[in-house]
Image (cartoon, rainbow, N blue to C red; front, side, top):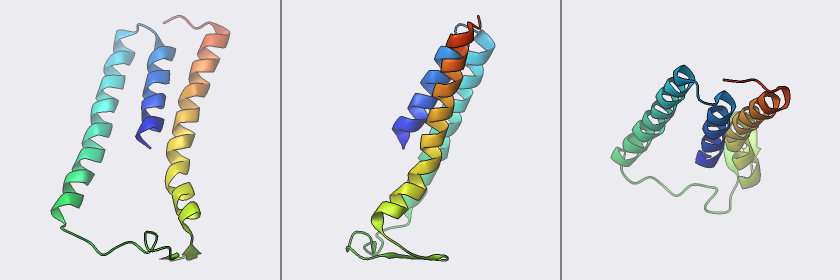
Length: 102
């Protein structure tokens, strides 16, 4: 998941070239993402030990819409970061193909 966000930020940085305003906005966005995931990590560590996940036990995960296997859970968790990474790469390809100068 983190690799997807790294790809997105690197692609956007490459697409915007040397624009100082764009780089400033990208740095702020990277810091925001670090805080977002960092606070979640800190909160998860303070919660203490949890029960073993049904997925780690080889069972299905019971959700509001029904049972999901491990593959479906990972697919749902990773689809948004993958879409974000592809969006960043698409912006880079478009920028390079039409020759936008920063």
